[in-house]
Length: 572
Image 1 (tube, helix red, strand yellow):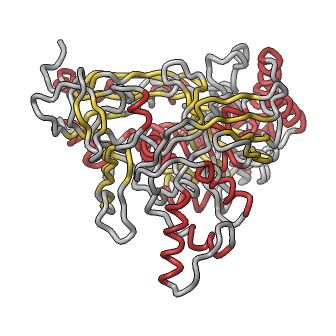
Image 2: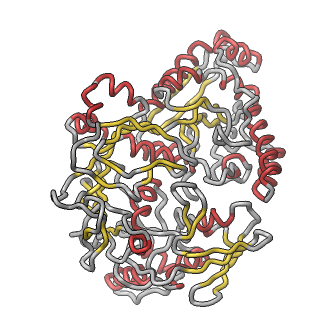
Image 3: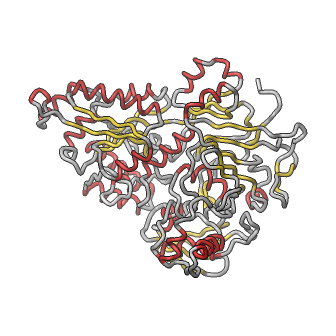
């Protein structure tokens, strides 16, 4: 099973919170936007300075195979630059648009979509994109032997694929869903099939056995060992990482993406993807502030950048504060393990909800957010604006828990184990506030903030009563996986028949007004039942170098398609 969406956004925020660095290698006379020469270098065209490498600090990937990788760090900081999907979203409007599929045509009943591949697309090794490449993931999925990663978000929604000609194929969806085309098209990542076939054959040869057939259990065994190579993609950059070393990924140090000389995106949209490279540094948080003060960072993200500026006012001459939201940026919450007694009781969960002071939590995040009460964006039409979560009151929580049989004075105090991943100081401060309220309410809290690997192990072993996390939202506002009894990301195993029916009807509702009504009713049930205690909807807050120009914010967050580094005087 793929990692829960609640884990994905936390990784993205934690990675960003360590800051981003720009390393300048630009010649003084570089003045024009890039094209890519046959050598793979960026050449100059009129308008924008060239020659810099855009560098960020992130968690080191554990898997960059586009068919098995699950990490959001890899999706956001590697595949976003190296591998295209069938469709993507316009960064300015958020509207669905063609990517590897130049056009797409939904069936009137919403059960299928015909995709037409873009002509002339080549992989970073120069080989042409073929239908076999596009359908390679589907081939692996149908065989059932490879542990499919993030691409499974698309493939698991697919019932069948029919090739119509060398450029067109029809995907029939497994279920009727109002955003099925979005869900499939934007997750259907494409790598070069022959690259992986050759790698598997090489591994088999080392073992002295014949090359296994694609789809076989033997092929899957070798395929799953390909974790440090992503192969050539069709994105604007590529990762060169030979299996025996010598590539652009130095373990425990950095990873460098270099320009793809055959990028169709630069050809179709001149002046985009101007950086001469993308570099990820693998560092812990200890040196982030020192790097910022030394002027090494292009951008530094923190829940309380205002406090950073107050402590170091000279930074204001080199950095500007940027704050923004985007459509998948979700919610901080504590999920209750409804498999366990007494957390299966709504009255106990509601009492625990009174131990979270949302005003204080918001302050812990530097005011960068909105108090939360639903698994939806606060500006969405279905958001339950006229309802409120349980009020903060440790005294009232203590009274309600006593009525449920939990009285510390009689030796029957409620005992809770809450786990959270380390790395986000603001979340830790919010949990410390919760711990103080627990003491007032007579709840014996075992709070464990642990390393990521430990967090995953304990989460999967169900060794917790509460799971403190940040939850990712679907771009198309579908909370099914978070609340349905059979939802892939319903980590607390909450079950409510009425909620199941509402979310099932909502995802199949093509009428936006009907869908809004169904989701509003769903969110009211969730707020009443409290399968999780809501904390806040965060906003990204960062310090960005005034030298970076052309980056924008929109429905997708920070967009770098037109960004570049200006080595001239800082703007006043």
